[in-house]
Image (tube, rainbow, N blue to C red; front, side, top):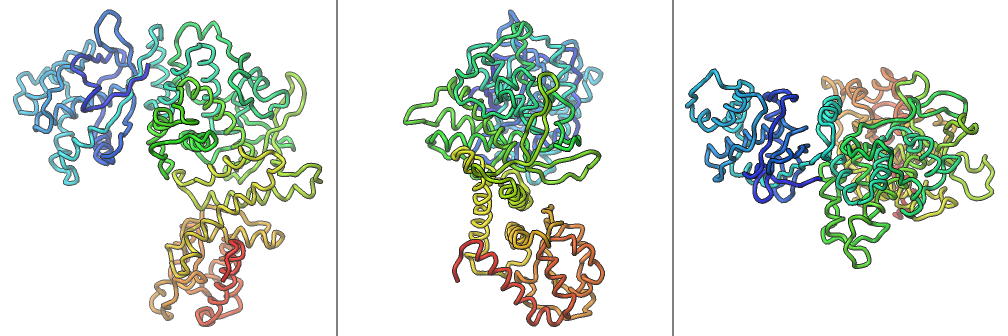
Length: 626
């Protein structure tokens, strides 16, 4: 059972009727300055208009004792919140007392300290030998933080605290608590929002076999390395993806009926292991390339963000109407609240969403989205001993029969019916290049909306339309270039010029002459550089008022930026020609121009001519008329 509890207000974690016991197998309170101050800062930074998930508390209800819970995981955060509330009561910021709602099993000093916090804060310690020093230190850290940190306003902090949510997860009655604690200790981290979400959605299913199958799909999809097929056992792999392991997963929940099997082990009721299970892989290596080289693949996003993309596609495909639209940003901190918004407030065809039906629909949708993501969205590929990796757009195939069947990977085919391979093969590279241009332009996963758009398009179009995926990706880049650069008509933005403009331009240059630029790859070049510098070194040559114009700009890595410094274009080319030849395509062109021209000719006419050529290339690609 999962309960959403607040720190203040109604349905609070420290309800005076509830009592939490820290068992003896757990370590004593151990948080120090860094952890305590970070918790306070996190709360203080909350947007006061929205709820904020701060963690989870896993408990086991003590049989025969009313509202008494043994804390299995989350005691450090729970104890700190208890101390924090006690301090706020002491300074008068809270009116209601917290009560003796927390205790330690077989730790008399800890219990003495917890029951005497108000006296300790007032400097009235009666028995210093009975004080638990780690808890005393926690109290001191909290007090010093509020007294010395000028950014903390105690009234505002209390207001923020009212929006803090903590999820209390009650483990099933027969769970082996020592085993569970061992799992969580090995894991070394709190349950994340996607763990809580999994538990909530599984709880909507009444059938044990359905819950187990839901868990298998969720676990497979949550491992974002490699391809989802390889995260299932061979039995489920063939049931879901067919004999060749690459069929489209079925659309209806009833089609998976033969997968709803309950094992003897799962009948024992220890379902919490499913909720917290670590990411796993069936094989250590993802598979082979078609030339028998070992390979592994990494995703360009983590699972919480994949869930957010999947939810947005689900809302669009099922025409879910929402009173409050999902936010513009893909915010992993709002994962639970976004799902809650859809499930509790959303309507399909005017009807409220049934939670059991949603859980069934969403887990199938998650599986299908991951299938499309693996096949049509770029990954990072590592072969042999290579640690650098390269962009990859491949799909899974199989070789061999029976127990000797293995996966191998070859370029994703973007072909129309009955096309020759020589016709469709180049499309893979084009799709890879435009996607990698988007990837390096939008480095934060919060703004990678292009993934949502591509996945949505794939759902809405048949396989024989897949070549048009390139056009969709190009359209996304072109639209961003129009809206954020060309439409404004101001090409003198300097370092504020959006990165997508440079990367889209490089894609267009690459496509215009693939042979000449065959060695070019998109990298994380995150620094906009002035070719003719902003501040000429030591006044050795004149400054230039027009330095911020687009023709004088390029995108480079930060390490290159530090080398270029304030050198003139001519000096940059002479000193770092090899580096420039491996750089962005616009930079290479600028280098070629300056090789046969002077710094003076660059600012007199070469820069303007170069800019006109580049801007016209962008305008043509964006179908923009002068």
